[in-house]
Image (cartoon, rainbow, N blue to C red; front, side, top):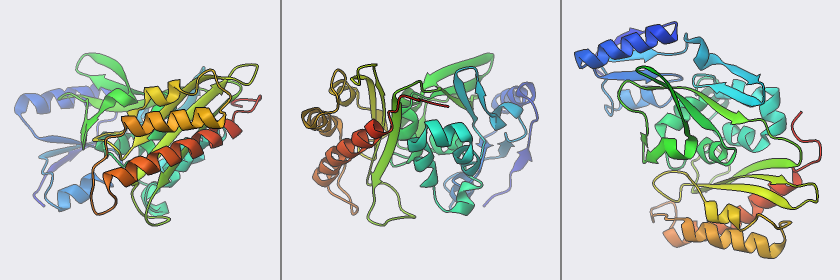
Length: 295
């Protein structure tokens, strides 16, 4: 591993200025949040930055709070800390479960949701859960801030929508109201310490009569990047989650999935598992749609 410079700006202005200077000087720069992917990639020679900018001292990246009716998770907040945050545990149990699947306890103490998202693995567990829950990525730009839905942030295998000189600052989502529930499940050959062969996240909201008013279904590991399966969600709206509705949602998800065949499973196997998981995840999310909503 070649030598590199290390800096840790302590404010947005300092971070923005250092990024601009590095860009102007043509320095190959890499942002560090948790480093659980970056440091491995550097040791393997896959990345060779001349400058590493550690963003953990920038207050906005360490935010973990409820701002009005919005949950804010800073880009460098450790996964373990995000998982244990009361609102995440109570109102986003599907997301909390997805976070719990990130490596070991030691990895969760260092890895961040922001880094997991920026790494943009098609099989990343938290990404379908973030998409299903309507999270947006808040991005620091050269002259301000911009936001993107998470489904638009991931663009390919290991690729994201960040332009040169931009940094992910935080993830934000509306706090769920009454009669709303989420869920995430995956299929893996092993029960733990593995990556998803298929991953499915869902967020459902019911109306006063118990009819599904909105539904978001997100799929992972069945395309170059996790994505929102809009037709699958649409198949559930206006229903009570009857078996026929679940079958329709599963069929729509299977149609949207574009998996590959590899040593971990054939494309046809992945597509079929996708349909099975959609039905299971929707059923679990429905069970969590209580009249109390988020506390």
